[in-house]
Amino acid sequence: EDSAEQMQKALTKLKGEGATALILDVRNNPGGLLNVAIQISEMFLPGGKTIVSTKGRHPSQNTVSVSRNTKNEFADWPIIVLINEGSASGSEILAGALKDNKRAVILGEKSFGKGSVQSVIPMPDASGLRLTTSKYFTPSGACIHEIGITPDIVVERIYPKGENGEELDGEDLADGKPVKAGKKEPAGKEIFEKLEHEGIKDPNEIEKREREESMKKRMSEDNQVQSAISVIKGIRVYKKLTTPEG
Image (spheres, rainbow, N blue to C red):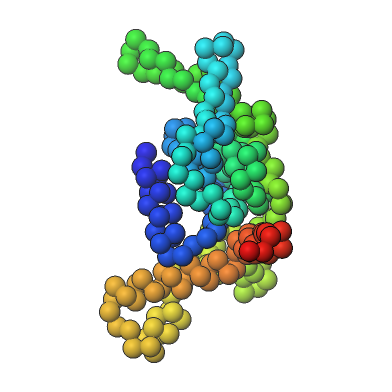
């Protein structure tokens, strides 16, 4: 429920630190509340742009959600949205809204395809019946359900190799580093030794630096993230080439 509020705080913090572009990672994000997905989408869309619509059997079930953004704080930010087969529902609404409004480049793999709207009907015994009553449609009128969103740039995830050359998936990695079979311990020994060498002994500072170093390592080994960074660099170069001097 507070995802939109947390997103706004994070964006404000990034902007204060000098950020001018964004990679929005909704891989394996199964979605959440519709109104929150709409609130986050309109942070990046100018007012008047359609975010999502729903269509049911009866006209009374049809709705259109439109951005009411008047600030346009991040209008100039190049945005890449990462999706995969685990991106569903609310995350697909976000990706579809930014894609169809040409506000972001979608990169990764085809999303799950969960675009149905359920209504809960109260029953006499205090239970509830969840019934599908309508479907979501992206701003271009495309149905998400059982179809998903196809990325603008398809990049399959390549996982690091293990000691014996086997491919490791997310379950085989701890902080982005391969771990031996049967062990799921964070691989922070090398980082700890590095910090100790630098004379950093405060446990809180060590933990913070460990997280930062681990995240950097994970990002450097994530081929989809690295592809997104390359696309952002390309967008910036293109903007410079097409922007009149002065």
